[in-house]
Image (cartoon, rainbow, N blue to C red):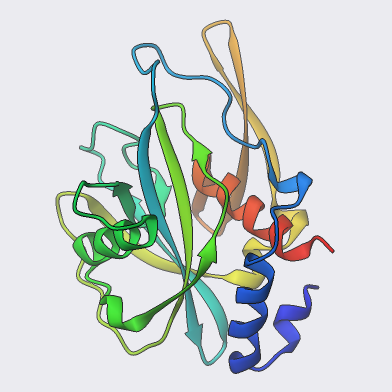
Length: 207
């Protein structure tokens, strides 16, 4: 078990920030998908997501969304709140906080940015920077009905357990795509979101 889960919330926040400030370990680099879907070649579009660590009395959780089935990219998949970086965004953190507020109503005042993870390039052509944030309740979730089908939380201790981080594959015609998956109850967390959680775990775990 990570030392994180044996600390008080105040010390947890400081421990996380300290770990995220270190250089990315080799085990957490190079985990992007490695190929693009047809028609998505070319320069990647900058994007950012918020990895919201919620300080609950029973322990830290991660706030996740299920994307609307009508979205053109990654429909119905489980993801972090986020999206492309707009010209008015001053940083990846600003973009992640803006998107989290737009998608689920999470107020930026409830979030303390702890650090960033290395960029992850998706098959759809986005270079996504995960921004890790400490979220202090109370806050009210108000999902955008166009983009978000559901909002839920998963214990961080479950997601950062290496035994739960699986490697699956799918065949796209003759092409085999290997990806990370972290099934949780009736939820199937996979692809970019699962990979970013693996990157977070390895970043925190590596000495």
